[in-house]
Image 1 (tube, rainbow, N blue to C red):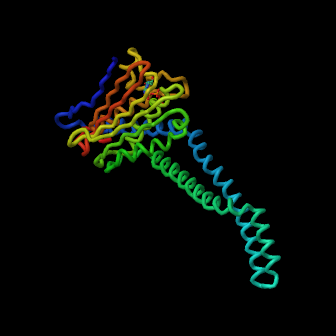
Image 2 (spheres, rainbow, N blue to C red; image 1 turned 45 degrees about the vertical axis):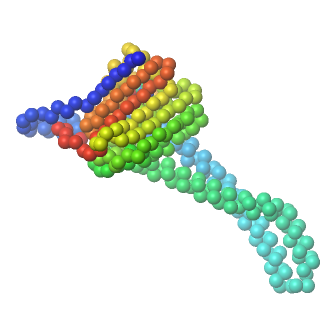
Image 3 (tube, helix red, strand yellow; image 1 turned 135 degrees about the vertical axis):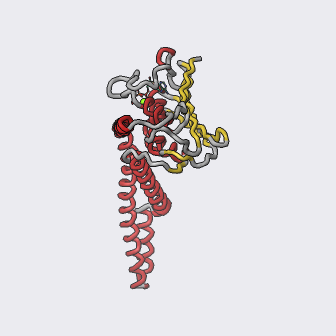
Length: 302
Ligand SMILES: Nc1ncnc2c1ncn2[C@@H]1O[C@H](COP(=O)(O)OP(=O)(O)OP(=O)(O)O)[C@@H](O)[C@H]1O
Ligand SMILES: [Mg+2]
């Protein structure tokens, strides 16, 4: 089995750094941030058609539900009008009652009564679904903050799964095996990008139907583990040593720039974590990421 292991090294630079090197490294950090942001926008661009579909779908049924609801409201008002005649003129009881039962039959009152609640419930769920997609998109596409904070990685994975739902729903079964995780001190906007890239790579690797398994757990007292495994085509012996190289891609033009894993590697390294991959051609691939729960001192400030 081909197995590639990539690990962040803890090589803090000894002594003071000359100022010109310092400004160069700040410039480099800014450029790296820009590249990360561009890659993120490129992924969103690629996903946009699917995301639009995900929003359009609930919008479609909400619109059709509202049309039914408006007809139901009309029917109910007509029915009430018939009752109102009764209120005004008790003598007309027999006529009114037969008019009422005729109206009830015409509007299929029993069905309407059941459907009314369902339509409202379904529409509200549709609206929540759209709100979630928009919220997740907003969180994901915000400018690349390198802000550090406490984040729930299970929530982050769910957020990314929502964004790529349209890519997975018809052909890929996603198994979530989330363990209880402590909040992790990290730059979550950067980790989002790592998860998105690995998940999109997994989707691309699966031709037709397949499975993706995402498992998270506390790895040791001060580390968490995230594993993303797919049943895709796997990575060949010739390629596995190159996948973390910038611009290495086996995808056709327009489908990949080859920057995803190299940026992911940089991000994990910056978090003093590790990223490893294990792949068997024809069987699948598993990415394994460990991250320290609390921020570790770093020699770079990105
Ligand atoms: N889960 C996977 N299964 C099979 N091959 C993979 C998988 N993940 C990565 N690869 C291989 O590694 C290459 C590099 O991945 P990387 O994410 O860096 O770039 P990309 O996906 O090609 O382009 P980008 O991420 O910039 O859109 C891919 O082109 C693919 O050949
Ligand atoms: Mg990629």
